[in-house]
Length: 300
Image 1: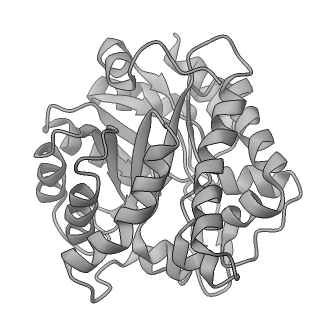
Image 2: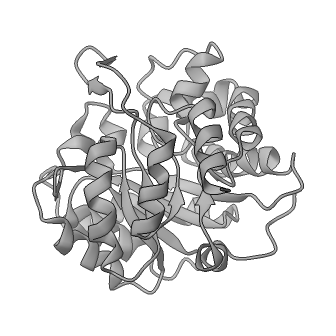
């Protein structure tokens, strides 16, 4: 498997890069059952070919950064399915390998971002949209470090510390990546001008700007309207801004269903780019069609 000739940080310094969209919605469109608590991570064990096919759909759509299927993949979550630690580590590494295999299908540079979801994702109860789990920063760091180290060993181009709901978890994640030797981006899930836990975004982004490992900062898994405001706030850090919101529909964790209509418009990426965004894509319910439009908008 090949790797890009440039570091992602260099590519972002030279221009804007198209990120992929939601992995889960593409897997669902491929007919996969995601009702399990492990969500898309289940397919790393049960049907890895579907994961590679979903990544490939985004590559064909013009995405040049692929986020792995490891968002909800943890040693603890796999253990509840009877999967031991060594086997769980192998599945985490597989998530990087599958994305890399899809990236190799085109001649253009495609970077692989290993997803590191928040602690709440492992709980599978929607708490990643609230944060403040009752754990200390040190406890959160101990939770995150083993899988971060495992993912880093698989050789991704970057670690995506994503859907972070509060500054405590951001601090824990940045401690956990210290010394692993892989650059990271940090994106919060937000509501209005604050993290999901209610902290001002200016404060939240400053935490990321203080780490030498961070090559980008921004938001994901939020409404497009909230992303509009957050991009300008993130740009004040002088770091490249990363933005990949949801479609605009609303997730109900109790019924495990989406409600409302989409407000994701690929054309608005021009405004995000003008405000400082350099890595732009979509999250939940944003599929290859929208990413194709987004990638087209970035080339004009």
